[in-house]
Image (cartoon, rainbow, N blue to C red; front, side, top):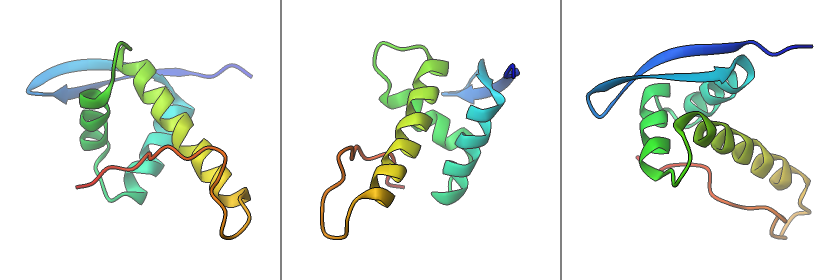
Length: 93
């Protein structure tokens, strides 16, 4: 099954830019933003500010991947133990 890449325009720091992501990553980003009570654009701005040496699309993919990997590790970890993988994928408002 081939994934469709969707290009969207986002305003970052007052400048319009385009971001190309597979639909699955856009959906994951929306789910994370909703859970954290953020707008997708605000979450992307935070990802943009914290990225290092990656293009924005890659930084978003890595953020979404790490968020769901952390969530899965936390669900699988026995009560009272630290999960194997535990980077923080949430942002303070």
